[in-house]
Length: 74
Image (cartoon, rainbow, N blue to C red; front, side, top):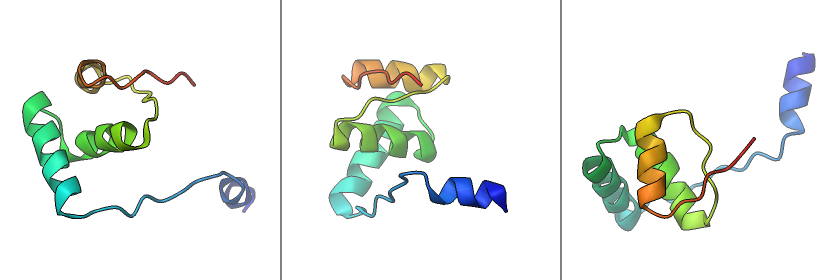
């Protein structure tokens, strides 16, 4: 129960943008950088929102660098 309480106070937001343009960007990123759909979604979100991206995944990190997404440090 305590863990659920802690999760509830986190400032988590859900991104609900999923139109045809977003799907095309996701597909393009996945194919261009050989990313999974999951990783492409994180990269696309970081690009669109102008956010940094924290990852230990080398392929995703390289794709982020190549697309101009700044690293985020925890």
